[in-house]
Length: 187
Image (cartoon, rainbow, N blue to C red; front, side, top):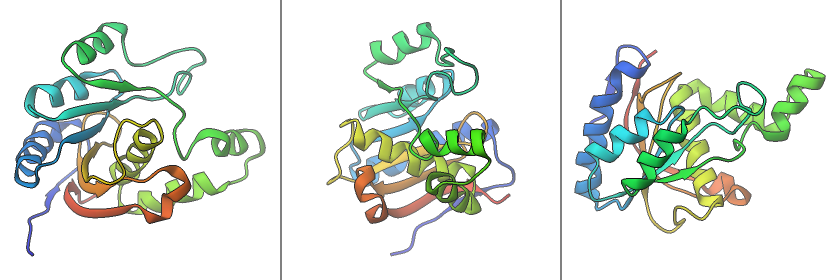
């Protein structure tokens, strides 16, 4: 089997439209039923809903307090729009951050979650994100672990990475399989 991977000259939100168009096309070709998309303020998820018709969109946000205590980046208005258009919003602790992030912050020591996240970043920030949000969605019961999905992530806003994968629950993390890389930055 031979498939094309799109490489972007640089990471970031300027790639969002092309990523979503690539995802829509591949989802149709493979009969993918669910797309998981990282979104901070909600704009990337809303655009995914517009472009990727006919599939379930799971929008995964930063956890509340990610940037500032008690602050949620996803606006109430965008949450309502996502849900009103059939999307599902997941706001929960990040798979690799959680207690590992607290250990790093408090004691300046690396725990396994931080090590895994940094290892995945060798392939790009978006690659870390797509794997993380897929497992988070599986743990929340929003994606099936016996069906392929497409996951979309980015590097500081928007989308620049997309993969086809078979998600797993966090207790089976090392069984996760990335089946196809649709696009990513070259860095």
